[in-house]
Length: 181
Image (tube, rainbow, N blue to C red):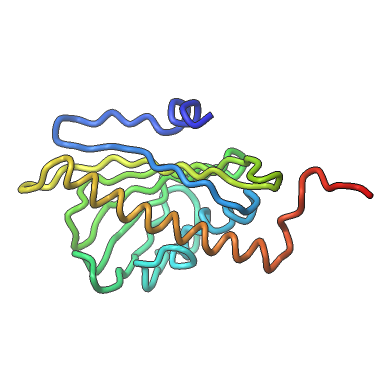
């Protein structure tokens, strides 16, 4: 299934000076809970640990909306301006492009898709996040991909932690085939 999702939603065509990859995360929480966090373009700090603040420009949260993100210390950036490129609540797809900020991630674009699955007989979610980004001058493709992979892995681990806690608190994770006595 993972390769089908890649072919359908995560095809990037990197040039010689870009790197691209996809990261997978299996989460023990129902897709509706995970998607509620991922789709919150105006509140990425709900699960992204490196975001300290987010302000959306304008009143709309539709395609083309811009958000100003403040990054916590410890990263080589303090701000990022990001545009909502794609939001599909039926297919659970979110696309974001970085359009400014004081960092080296030029022409960065990511797509996140959220897919229902069964984990240990319970509703679970497969999250796929892919990206494409320019390789900064002075860095290699491997270094750039490693850095972005590390950020995404941290975000996805946090997404799993938050989603799984929400599932337990809301008692939303019930067996798909409960045993009857």
